[in-house]
Structure formats: C-alpha cells, structure tokens
Image (cartoon, rainbow, N blue to C red):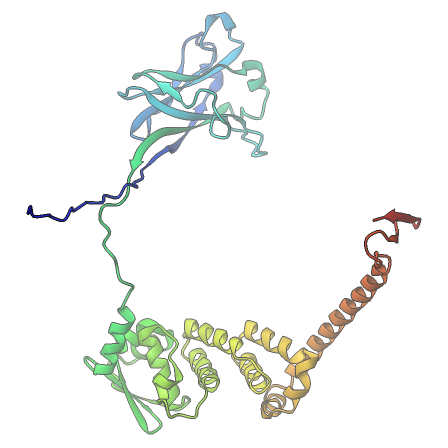
Amino acid sequence: MANLKPRVELELDAHSCSKSISETVNGSHRFTIKGYSLAKGMGAGKYITSDTFTVGGYDWAIYFYPDGKNPEDNSMYVSVFIALASEGTDVRALFELTLVDQTKNGKDKVHSHFDRALESGPYTLKYRGSMWGYKRFFRRAAVETSDYLKDDCLVMKCTVGVVRTHLQGPKQFIIPVPSSDMGRGLKDLLDSDIGCDVVFQVGDENFKAHKLILAARSPVFRAQFFGLVGNPSMDKVVVKDVEPFIFKAMLLFVYSDKLPDVCEVMGSSSMCTSTVMVQHLLAAADLYNLDRLKLLCESKLCEEINTETVATTLALAEQHHCPQLKAMCLKFVANPGNLGAVMQSEGFKHLEESCPSILLELLKTFASVDEASTMLLGRKRSASVIGLDLPVDGIGGAAESTNPNGRRLRRRF
C-alpha cells in the first residue's frame, strides 16, 4: 500500500498595500529692484535677474523685463518669469508670483497656482533655461502710479513648489520600543541609597537623597544647595514644616514623576485617606515649587470633592493659590443640595476661622447659581405653556397652534 503523505499547503498573505504620495517641496525668494526708473527704457527683451535660489534640489531665478519681453507690446507691460537655473529634465512645479504692496495695506498683486486646481496639472520645465511666467504681468503705467513702487523700488516675491513623488510600502521590520523607565530607574536609586549625599531629618525620621536630582526638580532645593547663598557641602537638612509621610511622598514624586499612592507611602494598614494625603502633599508642592505635583494634587482633589472634604479643600485652594480647584469647590458648595451638609461639617468651621473672606465669595457664587436656577425654571414653565397647543388626541384629531402673528391655525393630522 502506498504511503500517503499529508499534503502541506503554504498559505501566503494575499493582502498587501502600498501608497504613492505626491507632494510639493516649497521655497520662496524675495527680489528687490532698486532704481526702477534707471532700468526702464533698456528695451524689449532685456531683463534684470535675481540671484539664484534653491528649492527642491534645483536652482531658480527671477527674470524681470522693465520694457516687456516682446517688442510687439510696445513697452506697455512689464514681464516677469521664473527660470530653471540648473540642470534638470522634466521638472514639475507650481509657482506663485507676488508684486508686494509696500504700503503694507495687504493689496499685493498675486498670481498663484497653489490655491486652485490646475487643468493639466503642475507645469513642466524641460531643461535648464526653461521659463514660466507672464508676458503681460502688469501695465507699466499702472505700476509707476501705484503703491507697488516706493522710493523707486519694486519688491517681488516668488514661491516655487517642486513636485516630488515617492512610494510608501508596508514596513518590513518593526522594532517595538518600550515606554520610558527613567522614573523607575531613579526610584530604584533612591531606594538603594547608592550615591546619596544628603540626609533630611523630618520629625523622628531620616530620608537620604541626591542633591543634584533634587536641584534638577525643585528651584527651592537648587537655591538651597547651589544658589548664591546655598551650601553645596551641606549633608544634613532639618525640615520642620512638613510631616514625615508627606516628605516621603514628595520624594517619591521627585524621583518617579508620578503621584504616589497612599498605600505606597504609609502601608496598607494606614487609616489615612487618599484625600488627606493629597491635601498635605499639595501644600508641600507649593512650598518647594513643584508645579507639576501641585497640579496633579489639584486634579486628584477635584475628583474626590464631597460634602465632608470640600470645605478643607476650599481653604487649601485659597491659601495655596489654586484658582481652578477653588472654583470647583465654590460651585459644589453653592449647590443648594450640598450647602446644608457642608455647613454641618467640621471642615466648614475650619474654613470660617482660617479664610473668613471666602464666605463672601461663597455667598456670591450661591446667588449666581440661584439666579441661574430661577431663570431655568422660568424657561421650563414657559415651554410647558407653549406645549398646551400641541396635539394630544392622537391621529385624526385636530390641534391648534399659534403662529408668530397671533392668528390661530387649524391643522389636520
């Protein structure tokens, strides 16, 4: 019996793709013609040329004919052309010629191919010396009495867009690049105590750190260690205005650039809430000019606003100049559904004592919210009155409505 070998079929990906992309490489040149009256009268076909400029790998030049390019125009027009000034074959390009209004009133004379579709596509210049332009660009008499001529000078601006086409196929090789792990590396350095050159005594706890990293992150630390009155040799700092667990949280941010979790700072058994930690951390961020940490704390506190915490958060926002957080708190407290519960909280008593001026702002906010609610209620009532004219008796019934002129109209459904 013959051996039956399994048939192996190789399935190739039948789907592939590529993309042809045509785009322009653009560049401009400003050409000033000084002493126009002296150039005038040189004769038809005689020109003044600009310096060459490069766009899209090719050299270009502007040719200005004061008496026109053709003798048959009898010097009635000035002619302007753009010429390919380097070797090239079938160079495709778009052009824009501008005669600049020197009074700066924005009335430039512009001939452009960039802002409109071309019936036959971009222009093709076959070889070096090929030109594109206008034989009758502008009447010479009009130029000489216009705002384009100032102090016997004309200013031309030329923009060239060289067409380039390239094929874009699927990427054959993709090397995945992981996200940045700089923060993790620096945090590991902090945890290992390697290279630490300063110790912070905060209450009964000590924290080791690196002066250079602290100085790079905080202007306060930079001034303390390396400023005009700083001491680079300082190896111990006593901190009195920050709680130990908050200073630890601040150090974690400095090294990792992330807002630390309360469990990461104090352990899973801690009774401290996230809101309390972030409130204290915001104050520390303000003290050490850690602007990003301060904004992170503001954002977190906005998410955690409730009737128990909003009063202390509002006092904090007022004391540490957090206008966005303050506005959110005022809006929450001014809500009639929240005001009573907030006023019964312990935090509200603290708010009255520490920031009495904020109570006036709260009153103004409440008044504006109440006024807005009254207006909204009035609109709803008006809408319900209008709604009485809508059909209510179903298909086949008759309904009445009032047109803007006050006449009653009967409609059949």
